[in-house]
Length: 119
Image (cartoon, rainbow, N blue to C red; front, top):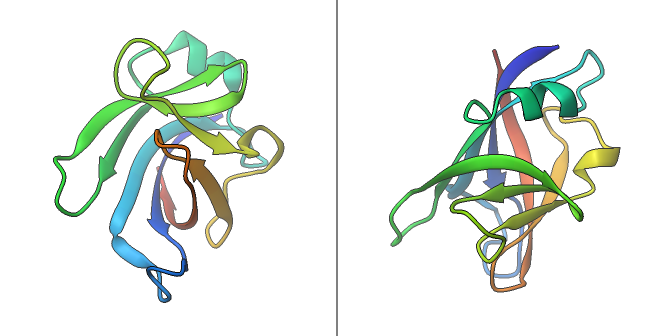
């Protein structure tokens, strides 16, 4: 298991046909050798699995990566009102070039591309 820092950038959408590097997340999680989040290591290190959300025209948000009954999510404060679910992450490895869908707090689902992964 190795702690990795990943950057996700908004992939192609109708509003952003070329994607957008200005709409991004940077997060740090423990990954096993196959690129899956290690849930035991994540639970044992409560404050280490962090996320930062960058969005034009909004202040950056800082939070943590959590596991809940729906799967993996980014959470910025206590409670689930602000949680952003990361679709399918429990079943897919995190690798450069792969896509993840994040459900925003307003319910919209946006595609993001993994553009970097480093220790």
